[in-house]
Image (cartoon, rainbow, N blue to C red; front, side, top):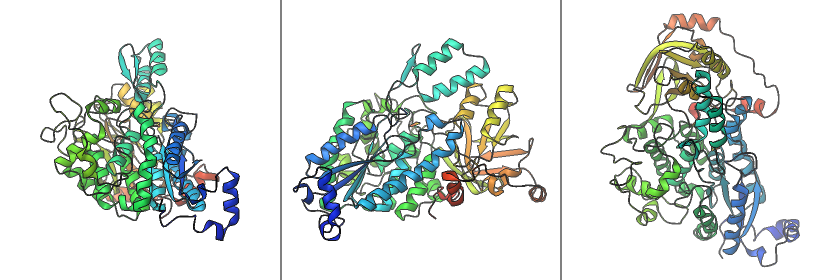
Length: 558
Ligand code: FES
């Protein structure tokens, strides 16, 4: 087969005979020496359900690669599960893991000079990390999503990971028995797969399908569905086309492809984390994709999906209505998607969608027509104001209302929120301000699923709002504003808020206002001292030194 411009076969013998000798050493044959070499990056490991099956999927990918006349070489990178790290110190390592994944895939593929790269990914940070690496490398490549989890069940109620956190809130509120609490915990997560709502993993998976970086339906097949294995085996034929046509990642990751990805995030009610990640992926791809672009897309895209966390259905339910291809086909038919974008099938998005099924609005209740949306514009809103001069990201589905005014209850850490909730100190009308949880201060912008779930579980979901310089988990629902920039660690206005200050969150006018005079804020700033980071060495020390603001995607290579 013809090889692309990165082909190593022409050079490896003359430049480094040891490389060829080593390839014989790993068991390749003389015939193999003329084949394209494809690096298969797996974020698999045994310690959590999102990633536990990825090494197995990688073996199927390798088989498909070999069957199509290429050499597949599996290597591994890390993967941190937010489900495991939420609510503890480990969460500080989660967002940095995205950049370690990006760096490590870039490092191996560039060092080993692979002709192409396939990333097998399953959890929140795996996907953006791998996409960033692929954008930097700009070689033929694609991703395989590990697939969504099946829902759990207890006493006839469908469960997922958020059910476990919300059970904790009910425990604080005394509204669940010990037996039922244990029953929920034991049955929330029944096996392999990524968290089952339109949380961060499924948000990234759906949007990367909209970007054309995976085979059709990759984001829909549950992890344990036979279609997932078939997808892995089909990767080889697709990879061969990409190599023959020399279609590289940046040919797919165009400006319009970014718009398609963010449109799907908005239409499906996806996670705030997608904003952070697509800013970073844009940086890696050399595309200027900013908070303004996110707001523009939000303004023109209705929320049409009744998916968790704010809705009713799980990702596993989407397969039955035609899968992601049917949703993309609908969005394309109403003019919300760019059809000319190239995809990893070697065809355009519009060509792929021509074969997709149609959504049936008579029989399915997950996706609403754009003429009857759940919300006429996107649920993710970019807010600015004296509390967030560099921007903030709000997730407002409309169920909570679009404006909240209340009095600040300041928490200097996530732990303080839980303490206040358990003591009953959080009251209706409070705006819970969680600070020192930004990219540098957290560090790593720890996600706030535990506080938000505890608030919901305590029955305060409709009567309090939360703002933070950290992030909210994709599983969050309620009136929440994250990514407040600049962060408290750098002396941003969020550092100056005091208990009882009035705060207005306005998702109609896109403002976040602290009702304290400029003069008073100047006085408060004089008495402000930066917190000292606990991290004096190691990966988080490096992260604090290098990470950019949330409004710049928290990239580490600016
Ligand atoms: Fe991995 Fe949710 S924690 S997908």
